[in-house]
Length: 40
Image (cartoon, rainbow, N blue to C red):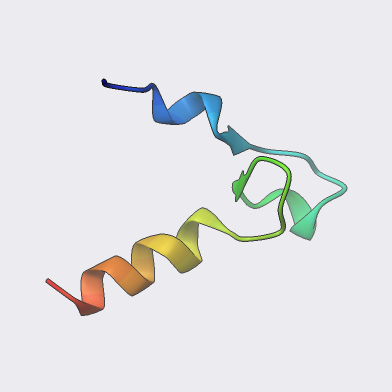
């Protein structure tokens, strides 16, 4: 089952100065992407 990742990402200027985050959290996409690149 393939899911559109854009449905899980939220951008709000009032949350972490507008950085893209996982919807409903304060976990940035940058943090997730950075962690993945360390394990490649």
